[in-house]
Each structure stands twice: as structure tokens, then as C-alpha cells.
Length: 510
Image (cartoon, rainbow, N blue to C red; front, side, top):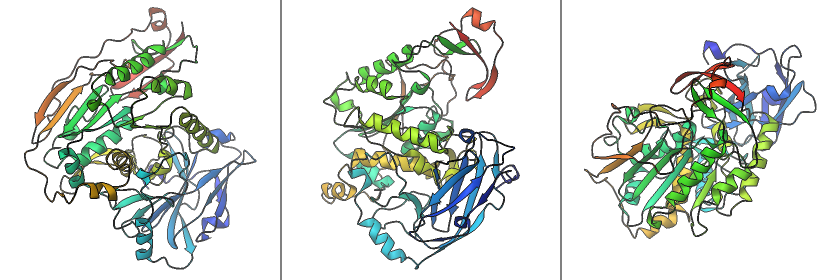
């Protein structure tokens, strides 16, 4: 905690589950909301996180019968002492419930670490099964102490573990073998800067420390357009894809939003049609260049259906629609959590190639490790640029790296890493081939605004064997719609910060 996050909330917590619990037995407590403060439960967001030496797990919000109380429950799996953080979280502020962090004693027979690790190794690979359940409430974060020896951990030494399956973890040497294989593999991430973190984590996993010098100042670091990173027969692509703001085909809205003199929102069918055109154009190329996996953030079922209609029925890849990966939204409340799960099931009904990933459950255990840590909701970014492990980690973020490993496994080893290793027929890589060529392509505008998706990106490419090129040249701002004159005459309703600077916001009716 820091001074800004150690301030006390006017609410309080009560219940035995704050102090004592038993392994395998549900424990609960209540947060009593101060009647003089927020009385609308929808606006009250609370975070419950237990941090132990080798385990991190979250409390789950349950619907309350009163607007004055919020109920939480959790089922601890391992005994020991935990710090239980109970916090009131808002976009720009954070308060500790008096007594937080509580000292929680979980009683039970000591778990044999060797037995736990062996059990994790014998679970099926999470990447080899159909992911059709939107809820991953069985998951928690464990350190190397409890992680399966054959499965591995992220580079930080932590990994997300489920009760029903274990995640295959791919090392840099594994990924080098993929790049050297005959089959071309391509991963496509579509989304905002939050989802770009998944793309960056994949890139960081693939490249050697020498190959990713200047990564944090390259065009790849922050792009509001399109980019590719090619290493042999392994390609990772990203396209800025802000369709959550674009509306859907079922909506009829004559309102617009302008940021300074640019039209930020309005004529919602334009970005949606451009997105459909982008995918249609991508799948019009030879099948070898088609992506094996697509990750995107649709707004609703109607919009998602239109997007999926642009993908050929003959494509046998996987689609991962992220329905709750943006912690900035108030999904810490029961109502919004349930709404996101219903949305996920509606996506599942659109196409059998859909795989559901409970991004919030993965992110929740690492909520103190966001870009704005220790603030939980001030920033939506689960990644940050860093320089750790002697340059091997240039993108830090367990949440995005976990998502990256999940996607890599779905693409590389859909039957599980064990069978993939058998298919190599003894071929291993103890050392990554020196001097391999990395190809970087990008078509990135100077500014986030106007929101824009090019149907046919026109990337500039270069090849390198030692580090990425720093971004010295600034590409021009893409052409976009200008805010109507009558709207520009109106008084701005607010001024908001964006990644490309502060903008004045105007909202008008056409």
C-alpha cells in the first residue's frame, strides 16, 4: 500500500471469514455500506484478495438482499496465514476497509507440495479442452511451490491454476521450434491498448533479449493501427479494434461524440463495416496466411454475429471473444459480473469455434499488479514495459502473459503439449539459432483519434537480427470525419485524458 491507497473507507466489514477459515469449507463475511456514503449498490465496488506465501485467491461477490450490505464468500484450498485485503475501489480512488489487510488463518492438514504438484501434472491441458464455461471461479494463482513440474510457471514464478485443468507453459526454446517448423502459425489480436498487452506479451515470449532491444520505444510498443511481428513461420498480428464503442447493427442512435475537432463516435456502422471489411480482406488471401486464433472484444451478440459472418465456414481456427477482461468497467459488482457471463454465453451460441476465457478471474488475483499498482481500477492495463531477468522480460504482466500462454497453447498444441513434444520426434532446441531474422511490419497513425480501421492496411516493414528500430518518424494522422460545425459550437461536457493527449468532449444530436 501507499498513502493514497491506505486511506480508510467509511464502510466496515464483519464476519468470521475475515479472520478464520477451514480448507474446503465456504467462508463468508459482509461489507456494511455506510448509509451516509454510497447507497446505490451498483456504484459500490469492493475488492477482496487473499495473498499468501504461495497462493493468491479472490472473494466472490454475491447478490445482496439489501443495498446496505455486500456479501462475499470464498473456499480456501490450502492452509496457512494470508493477508486479506478488503478495499473499496473506484476509478480514481481507493480505500481500505478498517482492519484491512486482515490476518486470515486458514486451518487444515498441511498440504504436501509434492502431491499438489503431481496432481497438477495429471490434470488435462486447459488448452486441449473446449472452453465453454464462462465462469472460472475454481481458479487461483500458485507459485512454483505448488505448480506442476511438467506444466511450468510464467517467468515470474507464478501460474494460474484451475481445479479441472492445468495450463501448458511454452518456453522461449519451445517457441523457437515452432518458428523453425514447416507449418505456419499466426495469432491475431484485435482490441484496445488493454488487449494489445496480450500481443506484446506474446512478442516478448517469442523474441530473445537481443531481438527485443528498444521494444518499449518501437512502433510495436504503442500502435493505434496494424502491426505484425514475424519470426520464421510464427507470426503475431495486432489491429486496433475498438468496436465496443462502435455500436451494433441493432442500434439506431442519432447522437454523436466529438473529441476536439474530430468525430470520435457516430455513424456507428462505419467502423463496424470497416472491421468486417478488414477480416473479409484477410481471409481473401491464401489460406496459409490465415490466422489460427483470433482474440477480439465484441460489444454484443448482434455485432459478434456480423463479425463471424466475415469468417469462412472452412476456417478451423479458434475465436476468443473477451467479455470481461476490462477491469475498468464495474465488473466487481454482482450485477455486472452476471451480465458479462450472460454475454459470454450469447457469444458461444453464435459459432462452435468460440472459446470462452474468463479474463476477469485470471486478472482478479493479480489486481494489485496493474500498470497503476497498487491502485486496482485506475488503469485497465495489466502490462507494463520493464527490464527484468537480464533483459529476458521486457513486458511485465502475469495477467497478459497468462492469456498469451493460453492462446499459444491453443494454436501450437491443441491436443496438449505432451503430444506436441512427441510429434517433434526427438527434435529439441537447447540453443536458439543465432542471427535469425525478425520481420516487423506496422501501419500506425500518429494519434488515437479518429478511431479508424483500415480495410487494407499498408504496413511498412523492416528486418532485423539485433533489436527493434526506435520510433523516430511519426506517421501522419489518418483521415477521419470532422466534428460537425454546429456541434463544435456547443460547450464541451468534459475534458478527458487519452493516450495521445487531453481532449475536449462534446456530445450532440444529429
